[in-house]
Figure 1 (tube, rainbow, N blue to C red):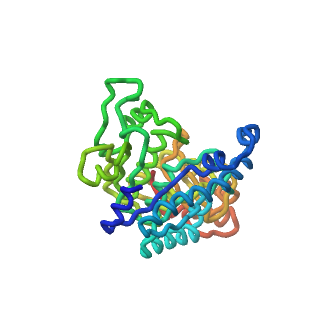
Figure 2 (cartoon, rainbow, N blue to C red; figure 1 turned 180 degrees about the vertical axis):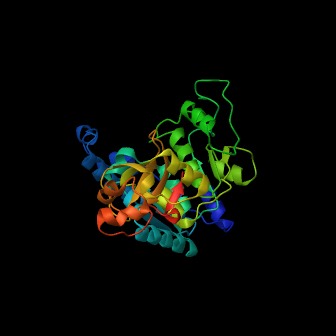
Figure 3 (cartoon, helix red, strand yellow; figure 1 turned 90 degrees about the horizontal axis):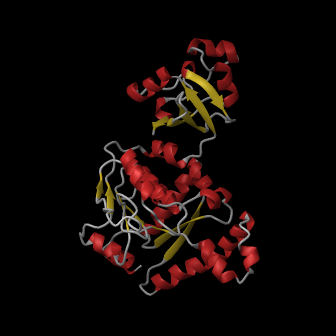
Length: 338
């Protein structure tokens, strides 16, 4: 934490994405082992509620020594999937930074059931970085970065200092790099790096004593991930990573080619299948005929409507539905290639 203070003293704006509420709650609650080891979601939510108080108290006491105010931001996936709350969260964090405070962001484990079961702070940190358009994302780990294999098992494992592009080779190395005692692991850190770099934000994964101080002093430590050349616009960034998809739309090869190579909109004629239930304005995943997701977008028509007009040409939509909103199922401005 001293390294964070040093950064702030150099006029750097720092946002901390923190975990540990459930673990601290388990330690501080004084409840019986039978209760807290049951694994039930309400038990974890209750422990998170207890732990949040103690977690923020730790941050408050530490930064108070340096006269630095701290603000807590509790977020769940639902907060980022709604455009209005997405913007509100962004404005709150940016305002705290302007005030000279240090925002501490936590997953809202007390109510976000899905986040407790499947969430990880790596993904949250990448989403927050994209939310506020950060200049850099630092993901701290219990190992020094991404290795060619697990350094705890393979003495010949080598640290990879720079990743220009996250590809299959990078993913394979992540499978072999162990991060113990965490929700997720190196795989989730690589996925977080993918989100951030696609948003135009460079990422470093690393750890060890005084890592931040050493890194910002110019030492070549950790693994740095360079941002992609094409940076997503703010709205498309939200569509790609901020929204929760409500359904699946499977398209034919011709439609996929038009979307990927020509930047076209998705027309009903290219839709092969519609799965799940969703409404107009919801986000959906676009899959090819092999079942691989390659894009996401905001639909103009509901699932029931798309099931009726899939495979039809635009001049046939009105005859089938009795009305027509748009020619497109998803306009290219509301579509993001992953």
